[in-house]
Image (cartoon, rainbow, N blue to C red; front, side, top):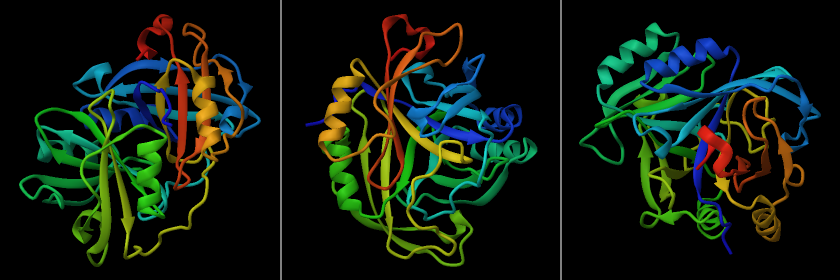
Length: 305
């Protein structure tokens, strides 16, 4: 039985300097929409932490709130720690952003404190398109693909077991398969590796938004890839992907029935003094990526689904 959540709402990325990170993502064409900054620390059991405080911007592409949001967040309590996961490490690997002028964005990202990792090269799935890999000032990767607009198009998750992850996102999270899993490759020139790597991949779409989740299992583990582990909520890099729902407690029961163990039961969380409190739930997904449920209401303003 799948959760009753409405849609994928945002993907979160932790940064060490919010204004610097914002400038970098604005160079990609994203726009600041909603700031979430609670005025005081609060209990952080939902995150697996004792106490939490942060400053963050919800950033959107040209599709606005109809599309995905990037929750770009700087931890204040506790402070940010660690480094982004190396390529090939199980869990969230990268965001994929479509941009209308790839060459201009590549020049802008370097001027904004980011860096070009590799490319442009033909996209390994759609050879008619060019793609490039960049990283933000903290080393968080984003793949840019030529498109008609600036859009947060998909997230790539590195899987330890593609078939298991595919079944989980289909049967528990309610995503819709875009065909069967296929064999392919990840270009060395895109990732800054010494050789192309064989992979198996599958794409699944969100029924409530245009967003796509791409599951990738590396058949040739790239050098430097770390072992699977649940990352701490305040580690730098991509940490969680959130679904909006109308009943967090109902969906928590479904998540637990699958054998998934949340960090804590559904709890109440402040995201800012001028915003409604939210009911939230966090738990590790099939490849130790953090998944989240957010119960929103019509009074949630910019946070509503």
